[in-house]
Image: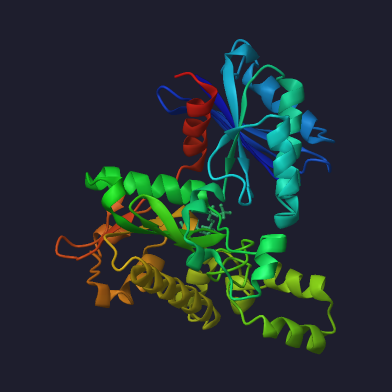
Length: 398
Ligand code: ADP
């Protein structure tokens, strides 16, 4: 079955078409600047990237352009749209309602809408993508795959915040966690690579991209993760602060004469390694600055590495041990220095990195030495493939 995977944001939309039998990507790309001017990027497997500037006043028009490209007689991959068997949608927040992927019917869409308060930037945009696809492909099954679902197995002591329990009962203020599709895919794949039963491993997945989170997976279940009610908590990220004393918000508001929105803007968009370095949110720029002797590069990188190592240590404690540590996403897959920096803190767990193996970028590889007590892996994530697999499982087909 051919699956169209859609990751719809407020002004952009990423897509892939995956043949679920061969698991090959037939075509992929993105629509950018939806509602502004509009640009379609389309790439057929083995083909060149095509960039087309075109009017895209709404998400419906953007998806229509993607569908047109997929059946274009010259560069398309299908003769007709009936070859698309199902559509898998990334949905950011499923609240406590969704512990697994689900077919998107009217009742489910209403429940996702009810979770919008928890992810006001993401869920409404995800829903716009779903509704546009429903209009354009009315008879094709749609499946929602939630970033939060994998973490619904967390025990109460991991998901409760230390605030009045009424706020949990009334408003569901708690840790939810994100990147669940990635943490699930990577932890499962690690078990396959090591030839060990998924249900018997203690795995820590470090998803280090622009957004970054770490997850403790015990016996195949997420038992803790660093992002919280929102994706702001936890690690220092590209532009997000991660953990910070909530008291600092009041202090900053007073000093800078800001309202809550102004403080949140700082913590979400002007913090992280970008804020710490004043150079960039991109680790390549920070490493280049460090190589030139600019102390702002190491200042940001060291803080990032230290915070990540602390979380790995905490999760080893939470699981009473760790068998496997996986590095994934942009920095995790492509940043040997960051991986090495984190692992250098973990000698007490018996982690020993093989410097030669750790040169790997973007490939699956064991990067620990044979005598390391914990196996460390570089393991590229594949959220689209994970979404396609979930979609086939629910839509029925092969
Ligand atoms: P997201 O999906 O959260 O936007 P990604 O997982 O794509 O993020 O990661 C993007 C980050 O990965 C970039 O900001 C950059 O810092 C880092 N990155 C990508 N390629 C490399 C590389 N070759 N070396 C070091 N860092 C890299």
